[in-house]
Length: 110
Image 1 (cartoon, rainbow, N blue to C red):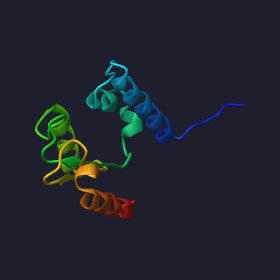
Image 2: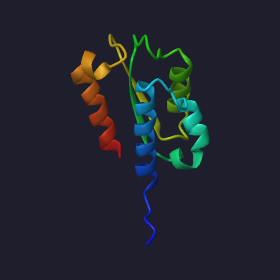
Image 3: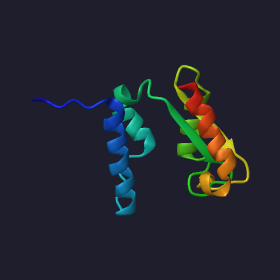
């Protein structure tokens, strides 16, 4: 019997491993490389980003920030982004209310 997993399940597990590698000193693939390597899996996958406007770790004007900003501006992709003012790398800690509202608005669109 062959087990089949949904593309979302596969991507979620890949991202879990990716994050684990960050904490074990092996950064793994960049988000851009993940999108390139797994283009068929992420095509059409709804992604919503909640980004802090004062993120010093992954600034909005850095490589990852500009990559996702461009995807969010491209209406042919299901990528959306809200930039939360006055927040840093973890907007859900810095501004819980606005970050959660951003996610709730996005979830209502699915």
